[in-house]
Image 1 (tube, helix red, strand yellow):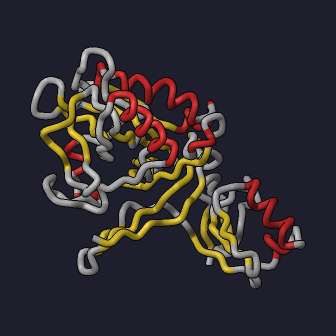
Image 2 (tube, one colour; image 1 turned 45 degrees about the vertical axis):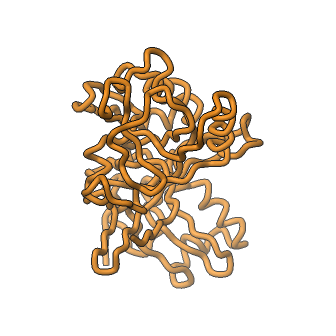
Length: 293
């Protein structure tokens, strides 16, 4: 059987690891006895060659290894078994442990949607804890300090120049802004195509987000300073009931549509973005997550 390289169009055998013409690696593959899976990363291919002890066999002896096409999928929703399976990727780095304030750890993202060569992803956990707005207690995303923080400090700390180039600008008409990094809206967190419940008032395991130890550390520090409670919620970008209130997702996965005050602390930040999947050198497959309702 003959296939065609997705990068240069050259004919390639189904079992080929890489294209003879452009060297694009387009297969996920596993190697017996090493208990590792590799995909979308030329450096890892070189590493697996060294670990296997046979630099040529990876490419030439396809009878030894098992190969399979691997492309990212939108959420796989199985209503009969009440499960949703999310493909995940590693992309960018940010401190995630208490002792790693000066180091960065890989960020894992869940895939919510695929459109051509673009993927809509959301962080697998809350990466930090911050107020929505620290200035005038605004509930408007466009003028919030959290929007500024995500698209400046977080953007430059979490992503290299090449990774930043892979993040697409996204128009957000509901808040009249265009951003690289943003938060989900009320309508998005109730979108069944993303695996979420359509009813905001329902508890929803798909909406639940844990927090990194780094985020919990910052949250506890904030709460100690002002004697606030640990809410363990995470922000949306949608206005709440009043002028200084912003919607959030509670620890049960229920959407708190009334909203927390924009200056509230102890609330997590779970960023989302659209990534150009053609930039295969900046992201890699991170397995999948199966969640039961």
